[in-house]
Image 1 (spheres, rainbow, N blue to C red):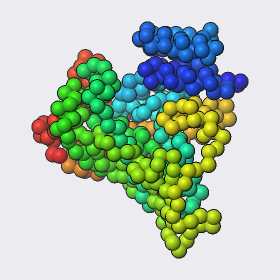
Image 2: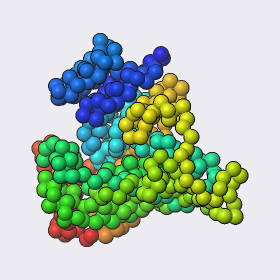
Image 3: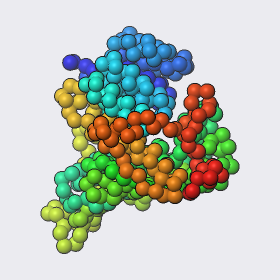
Image 4: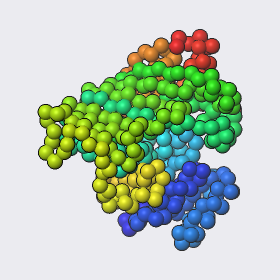
Length: 404
């Protein structure tokens, strides 16, 4: 295969990936789909500048789009609507990249895992936050054993937004951003920890903090919890603490701690640097007990520098192309994607049940999947605007009689 052909569905977020794909040697955009004529025209301009406009087909309807000439479907549509489109793509023999979460319900996660297995196609969650220079360096330190056995990790993805920003990001009363509980937008805080520790979640409990200020400044949004605190036991015995998407001004940051040393970035450490500390009695050769440094940039990091999210967006394309062309392993595969989604859902159930602990299913195990295959509870409005099974914040939950 000389080049991998991408179709991009959802051009609000997807437009930036169109530009990245067309710059990537060995990949090209051949189809895009969005209901908005304005967004389609914006992408036409991007493709024209890249010299590939004559190769791109433009669609308004997904069912027509999926019949087009493409190897990979990149799903950049609404957060809570990925699974059904991923399954359609897989049934057509297309590989899939899906942004943010695998599905909106446990049932969708089960259906998705089965569809991937039946199709034999590649599937990847587009979790971009592990793939920046500093976080890749932290992963290297962990994977090479320099920190010793990993015992603990924490991650905060903090994204404070003004009322005007929230209005822009929430176009409509039924939009997913108006309804998602604070635990649901989980991949940017949890994903880097899973990658650094090379671990999967096995059980979880959580708490959340309501903020009246959010209700006051954003009455069009219902998720007025400002902060969540989620704790997971991982399959390697480590404990991870992370949030979903906190509405607070604290910088995002990540830390990983082992028996010999610890590494962290953000929250007082410059974003382009890593703080590395070792036990004073076992400092590895070539290192100091304490150091703050900017990691050396690899060739891939240099190629990624003009893409979004600190270069992480570039790696989404790179990782999928390598998986298709060279059968390279995908870290955030469908089972890890489903596990992250289940962690998001069970974290919210934990909050709604006074911090109770929930076990995360092993989505590779059909017997465990059968136990949740009909669980379609959701906090998101269905197409007619009704049908939410969960409240969107702890204040509403308490008013409804949940034990918070």
